[in-house]
Amino acid sequence: MTTEIHSLIGAYALDALDDLERAAFDRHLRECATCRAEADELREAANHLADGAWSVPPPRLRDNVLAAIAQTPQLTPAAAPRPRVRARSPHRLRWVAAAAVVLAAVGAGTIVHTIEDQRVRREQALAAILTAPDVIWHEESLASGGRVRVATSDRRDAGVIMLDADQAPTAGKVYQLWTIRSGVPSSAGALDEGQSVSTRIVDDLSTADAVGVTVETAPESKTPTAPLDAQVNLA
Image (cartoon, rainbow, N blue to C red; front, side, top):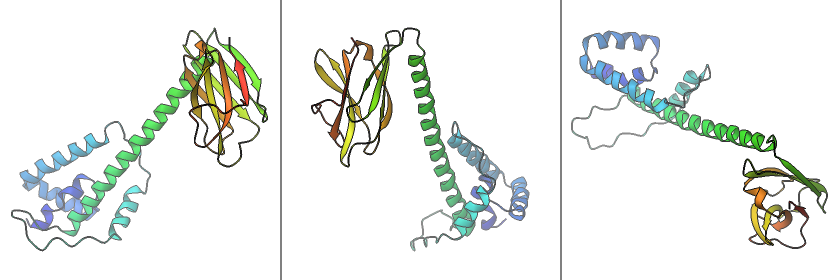
């Protein structure tokens, strides 16, 4: 067999061959034990890369990837030859590019999975607090318009601050939430610029004396600026 048929092994393992190429390589595998072993190893590696992050690809993903690869200029190999390394063929370059796409897709899938998992966990924690049998609700109006509601649960050892302002502060300003214990304020986080609605879970909120809301210079302040836009007394 020629060097060219050997160079198809990567594309074969990634299912990046057309029907004629695959049929030719299948025949080659029946005669070449070395290529069979290497193809098995490449497939196993690809399977491990996708563990925990696999999802059904769009129907035209393979065609789109191959079309993009065909339009991407390839770098010319270095002039100085390296010992015992075969020259790269267009097929070899194609499967390398396809492998890069696989890695990128796996990475994107992992990120999406992580974000979705975090969202589900947050919703479960929120529901657990708001439906706790000992939940206590407090509410105050914002001086700037709107309201802030606070739910606390000793059993869950946490609480929820829900801000619903009529409008966001002026440019360069943000709403910031505070917990107050024995007269000492501690930041519970600031909203983003332009944001007027927020639901925030705060650990150990039931031990606080009050919750405060201020308008601060973005992104946030280390100490609250008087006067408070709202103060919700919890005691």
